[in-house]
Length: 126
Length: 222
Ligand SMILES: Nc1nc2c(ncn2[C@@H]2O[C@H](COP(=O)(O)OP(=O)(O)OP(=O)(O)O)[C@@H](O)[C@H]2O)c(=O)[nH]1
Ligand SMILES: [Mg+2]
Ligand SMILES: [Zn+2]
Image (cartoon, rainbow over all chains, first blue to last red; front, side):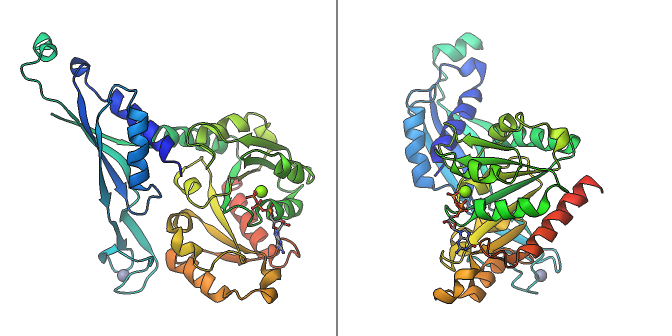
C-alpha cells in the first residue's frame, strides 16, 4: 500500500548514487532486494517506480527485484532452514526461539550505468 | 557498469526513528505503537487503558487518522493530552512515519510524560514496516475479523511484542474459533503474549494493563 512512497525513496537513493563524473550517463537498471516477509508487492512497486522515475535523472531505468527467501536459525538447536509457510518454529526441535536471518530486506544493492567508453563525458573526466 | 550502493530503502525513516528513540529515552518516556486493521477497537481499548493508568503513569497520545478528529476527541476525555496527526504525502495515508511522530511530540512537555501511546493508522500492512522509535509494538485484532488474519499478515504479528484479541463479549453471537485465532498468532510469533479482552465490558483488561505497566516501569526505573 505504501509502494509509491517506497518508489520515491528508491529513485532518490539511486539518483544520489550516480557518481559525479557519470552524471550524464544513462542509468539502465536499479537492483533491489526484497525479503519475502516484507509487505511490498513487487508488481505494484515496479508500476510506481516507472511513474516516479519518469521525470527523474534515472528516467528509463528498469527496476530489477530479487526476492529473498525467509531463512531462520534456531536459538535452541542451531538448525538453519528456509521458512516457507506461515510457521515460525524450528522444524527440528519445535522451539519458538528463532532468529530471522533473512526475509525482511528492502535494500538497494546496486545501479547499472550505461558504459559509454567512447562517450564525451567519460573522456572529459579521464 | 555496476555501481554498488547497498542502502536500505527506508534509511531515512530508520535514522529518524533512531533519533526519536534517543530523545524519548533521554526524556524518560516509554513509547507504545498500537496497530490494527480499521475498527478493531484501538481507540476504545486505549481510552479504557488510559483511565486505568492515570494519574500514576502520566500518559500522552498521538492519534493517526486519515481525516477525522473523532478519535482524538474520544481520547481527550481521559484527561490525557492528545495530538491528532493526519498522514502525509510520503507513503500516502497508510502509516505514521518517524518524522511525523517527531513533529507531533513537539506538542507535549515530555518531562511530564511517562508513556506516549501512538494509535497508528488502521492498517495491518504498512505500519509494520515503519519504525517510529517506539519501545513496544502491539497489534489489536478483533473477533469480528477472520481467524486467519495473522497468517495473512505475518510481518505485523512477527514485529509486535504483544497481541490483543478484542471484542470477546461478542463471542456468543459469532461462529468464531478463538482457539484457532490464538494458535495462528502463536504460530507466527511463538511466545508472544496474547490478551483476550473486551474493551466494551473491560473483561480481561487487567492482564493487559499489568503487562503494559511492567514494561513502562522496566524502562523508567531499571
Ligand atoms: N462489542 C464490542 N464492540 C467494541 C469493542 N471495542 C470496540 N468496539 C466497537 O467497535 C467499533 C470501532 O471501535 P474503535 O475503538 O473506534 O476502533 P479503532 O480501531 O480505533 O478504529 P479506527 O481508528 O477507525 O481504525 C466501535 O463501534 C466500538 O464501539 C468491544 O470490546 N466489544
Ligand atoms: Mg481509532
Ligand atoms: Zn531447533
